[in-house]
Length: 469
Figure 1 (spheres, rainbow, N blue to C red):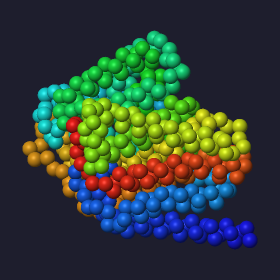
Figure 2: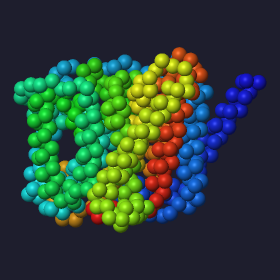
Figure 3: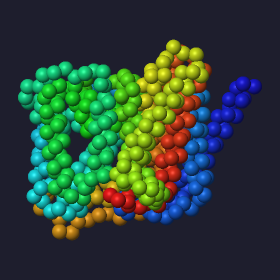
Figure 4: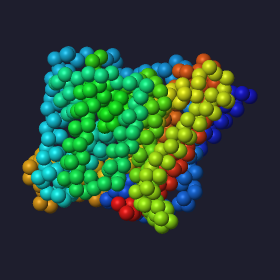
């Protein structure tokens, strides 16, 4: 009877998962891609009731968690997240040094060109080398490369190249700070991107890069390159955390390939609440930018500003308050898990162990948020990189087909499904009891379902320009 009951539950869960996916993807042009706020996105309203669309999205994540709970063979779970194509391929030290030198030269050249052309080039964002390279190239394309292929920022980082060539590390970095400075830095950079003219005025972008360079070089020289770029520098931490999802890794141990996202199970670099906050902020900043570029988000901002609050204060309260709520919900899930199962693991330990699953969610969000933007501007990016000193007379922007919006739904769901498997694998690495491993995931899956429904709701909304900005 037990076996028959398990088989019935499996069939039910599989049927629910398939029905959910079919419901979401049967009309891929239905979503308006509001979370992206990109040119060329479809602006059609949902062809199915919104409540059904959101419910099926949450059901997809829930059904995947249900199905994963029946995968209890520890050896199979371990084989999945440890699988790789053969052994690691050795790479000679001379080749690694040559790649680092080439990457450093390329990074310095791009930084110099962005600053120089930001001041001297045309002050029109659609033809500006600086704006196109920073936002279409780095913010969109290179970040996608970091989690879809491999993380190469350590070699390309122009500030690290400079600091490594001069004496550094005169004071010790306070380890008690962890990566909290990077959390504050990421929040600050996204705020600058949202609330200032860096995306529309190349000279302002160039000035921001000069200021960022001065702070980065001074800080890295003071505390040392390794400490600064591993703990403090927001760009480096941002890209490094996304790079954990990538299937390919090239480091001092050689070249290796794993299934996408499976390194999240075995990497033990996350150690404290500051690391958890980095993972949460990667999810939240995309949710925030999605919300403020919808008609409902714009209406909420206008309503709050209408009672006398300055617009920037409204944005700031939404931004920081939303981050606090996202982080609080995740920490609450860890506390609930620690209370409801018999374990010696503290809530902080559980929060740290399950935090890598949030990076899979963040990668799915980022892909949904920026892939249309990147594809649309790819001709301009190619033109800018191939001929940086001459601006195109007629910039080319690709128009995306209506069905492209359906991909954004798929990217969000794939990110969440990968996160469910990462959490499942981590649970079985943490708890000796199968019942503990299964029950420990439920609060975290509940938070994932909430994130899923929220992100799909944003995608379903019509887009609008953020007011007062």
